[in-house]
Length: 186
Image (tube, rainbow, N blue to C red; front, side, top):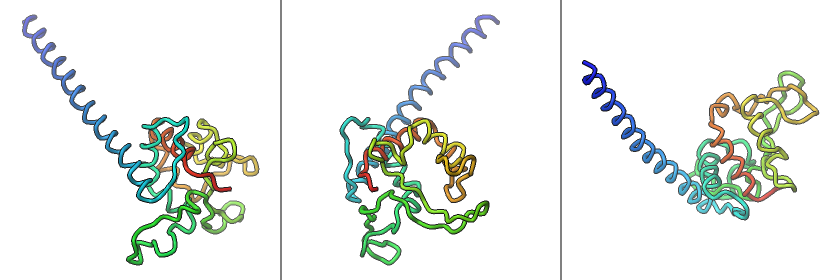
C-alpha cells in the first residue's frame, strides 16, 4: 500500500513538473509574441520610441497592451490623423501628433460639475508619464483615485479603472515603460 502511494505521488509530481515546463514555455512564447507585436504596432503606426535606458521586453509588451486595449480611444484626441479614420473606410493612421496627450472631453463631473477630459499620459520633462512615478501610476489604475492634489479623494469618472485594475503589476509596469518611451507632448 505504501509503495502504491509513493508511486502515485511520484507520478503526480512528474506530471506537475511537466505541465509547469510545458505551460511555462507556452506562456513565455505567447508573451514574446505580444512583445514583438507591440513593436510591430508602434512601427506600423509611425510612433517613434525612445529606447535609451528602457527595458526592451517591457516596452514591447507595454506597446502591445496600450495599443490593443483602447488607451488611444480616450487619451488621443482626435484619434485619427487626417485621412486615417478606419471607420470612414480610410487606411488606419493614429494621430501621432497628439498620441496619448489627452484632451477628449467627457462632460461634467457628476460630483463637482467641472468638465472631465482625458489626461495627458505622455512623459513630463522628468520622464514620468502624466508626471507620476510608477507606484503612483499603479495606485491610480488600481484605485481610480485622481492623483492630483486639486481633487483629493475624487474618483476618476471616465477612466475605466475598474477594468484595468485587474492588470498584473508586470502589465502595469510594461504600460508605464511604454509611456516613458513615446514622445512627450506638453
